[in-house]
Length: 238
Image 1 (cartoon, rainbow, N blue to C red):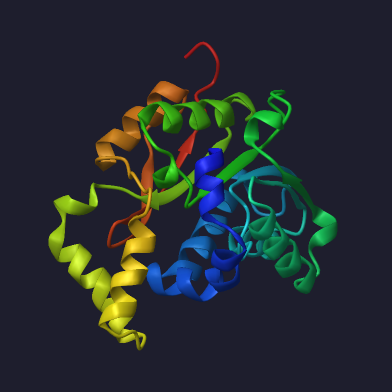
Image 2 (tube, one colour):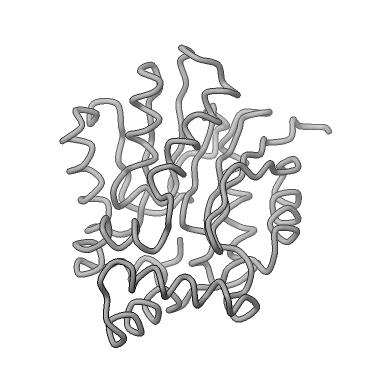
């Protein structure tokens, strides 16, 4: 995540992140739970594995779900936002999981490029990166840190927001469903859209992944603009 993207997640946004995320994404917890299930299905139940989590700040929901399902998994959790990473650390401590997670305040580029991770998770990051070059770069950085054939769970918004006015209206209506008035809805939607540039389509995501060294993604979750996919790092030489 770029410095500009990280700056969006300041202390005020971190403080409201858990509630806001569950309103903005219908199925927030289900996405994390299914991500854990997909990774376990690939790696095998009861296996020992080391996972890289990119953009791990916030509720740490993806880590908590995966760690609860698979007690022999350990995690390196990277996030450039101090308040968001502190929030995640508090959630992990409350769940009794802090000993299994190495939090890293900073960017993915600061993690060794040795392909030592058995899997990776990046949820809610890609659409905050400003252009295809930045999106491609972070996916390539993940690929260089994964063992050949290792799975990646990628999740986030896709399709340009303006291309789907009905989904945008339904998204705003979800805020009304949760008690927000017209002015608050306008403010919330504005904050969601601030600086966000989702991939243009599911095909665009597949192209980005392919260029970074991953195989064809399998979508396993969808909610309005949101999608979640599982892909694997293509073994060297293929």
